[in-house]
Figure (tube, rainbow, N blue to C red):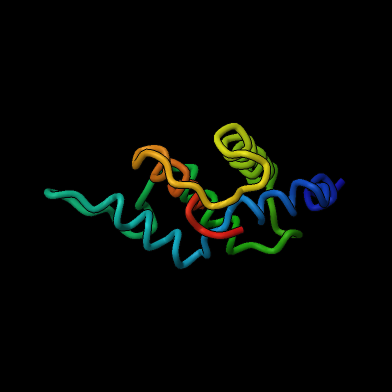
Length: 112
């Protein structure tokens, strides 16, 4: 069975709903977050591993996804589901909370 057949429509749709930042927005965010006073990450290594994985997934077609990609998609959906209400209405929260979600491509202040 091809990996694309393992990704049901519900996971595909949920992932692309909860990841509400564009690949450009996410890349810029990860680069900004990784920039420190003493060092700045190489752009393709900026940000946390899950955030970089989300960025890679956004650049792929559904037919090109790997089993690792599917697990990352499930994890991102699980994290957002656990920290947000189902409506995903824009909501302000603590800075660390918002930044943690943005690290995986979900901006809680962005309209659904």
